[in-house]
Amino acid sequence: MSSSADTDQELSLIDHLLELRSRLIKAVLAVVVCMIAMVPFARQLYAVVSEPLIAALPEGASMIAIDVASPVFAPFKLVLILAILVAMPFVIYQSWAFIAPGLYKHEKRIAKPLLVAATLLFYLGCLFAYFVVFPVIFTFIAKMAPEGVAVMTDINRYLDFVLILFLAFGLSFEVPVITVALVAIGLVTPELLAKARGYVVVGVFFIAMLITPPDVISQTLLALPVWLLYELGIVFSRLLVNRSHKELEKEA
Image (cartoon, rainbow, N blue to C red; front, side):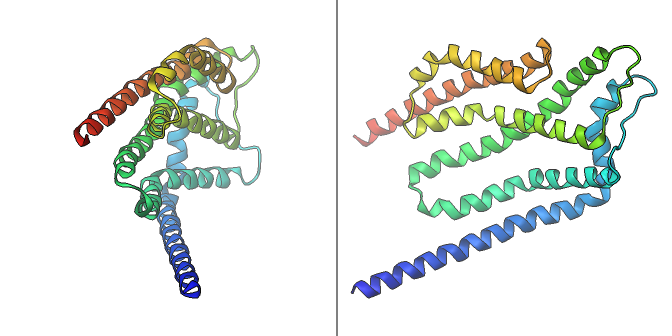
């Protein structure tokens, strides 16, 4: 009897591992397909990403390539990151398809909208950084350059800089999802989140000061949206709690 149970557990574990391998392969293939599709446009894509800096540079200034392989490596690196971002919804779906069978019905009901919201908010954060923050930051940097200093940024270092900002703003825009998730699993309450508002505001501005260049405008452009998104997370978490209470009353 015990031997049969152990055999069933081993088969179940093997089945899970095989399914995990299948999901991982599909996710990696999705990234590879996106990357192959974008490789022919690598130079154009880099030109788009570098446009906010190019537009802010003084007349006659340009970007440079310090390393020998930078003209090839930087666009290829950008294509790889973009391929991951483009394939992210499919990758998230594969992750969801693997873990969903082990979740309860109410957990699935909460997790689905949170996953969709997390993906959309990350993209929104990246777009906000590109269209709103980058022009302000690079204009400030170009104007702050001392007289006689030519602003000529290396293409690889520029890419690293903007990728960090993309990641920072993308993750920062996840604040509503994080707050709702914390309330959903019972770690905090909306009332506790509201009481912690003052500490969150100070922390957000401090983190913004560390991430962005040392000017008030760019720091505010990161801190203010995150603060507003935190308030939005409190609103949605309260709606979640009220809905849960109503469902419990109906069941009673």
